[in-house]
Length: 79
Picture 1 (cartoon, rainbow, N blue to C red):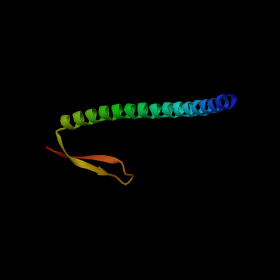
Picture 2: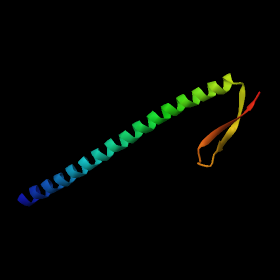
Picture 3: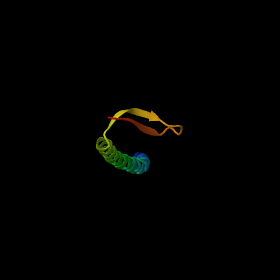
Picture 4: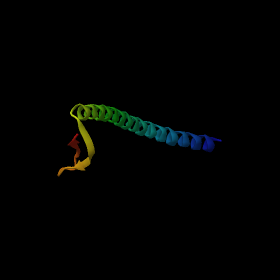
């Protein structure tokens, strides 16, 4: 009986440790998701702002290109 209780205690300790590690990992992943959602929200706002600027300036978007630093650059032509 003592052997069985000892084994159960060891199993409980292992599972408790695993659960604590998983909780920490989950919190990190939730922070990553929140940061990504925040970034997507900001990018959406930038896209809307850029689109409005393009519309107001009478341009037609003809595509996106990458500059020498691999940053996206909106290319437009005047209408």
